Amino acid sequence: MLFFSFFKTLVDHEVTIELKNDLCITGTLKSVDQFLNIKLDEIRVKDEARYPHLAAVKNVFIRGSVVRYVHLPANAVDTALLEDATRREAGNAAGGKGR
Amino acid sequence: MSSLGPFVASNHYPNPDGRTLTGQLQGHDQTTNLILSGTVERIFSPPDSDEPSQEVEHGLYLIRGDNVALCGLVDEGLEGGIDWTAVKAYPLGGMKHS
Image 1: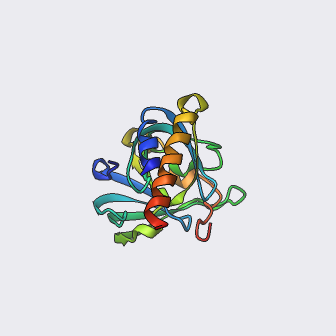
Image 2 (image 1 turned 60 degrees about the horizontal axis):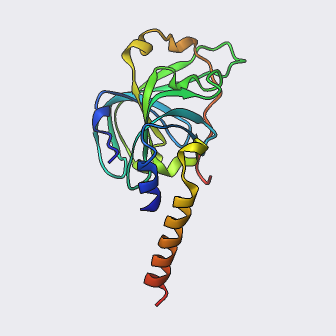
Image 3 (image 1 turned 90 degrees about the horizontal axis):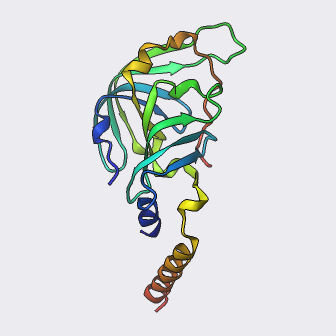
């Protein structure tokens, strides 16, 4: 749930999603769900000439399972906060599972 | 919560096997299974070939969620300005076993 919450803080930021088939799509993050499915608005495909398949499309829903990377603006992320949250999650997981 | 609800219009799907299908989204569920009516598959010719790109009609499709990569809402304005038979592209890569 940590990354679900993390992505919710990035709504309305511009991100680039790199898919497992090497397609890179830049757009405004509009929503995310528990499966880390992503909705982007006003998309631009990187290297449009090579990938004209999405020429008529402005808004996309991307299935979480096909995402390789989510490229984020560095200034949108509070890494200290993320580190703390991760430590807490790890602590909970260890406490919960390692009885 | 992300939802495909607003996409109940025209849709356009690159699949993990690289295929692009366009049709009307009639239904969907949590695992991204999709029901697409009036499905048209666009087969693009590679840029170094003279053949025009083709469209193949498939009718009503039920697509299992595992095979959906991306679902794009077709913008009617942009779609009208594109002659798909003239568009050439290399096939999209497959994503199985990535």
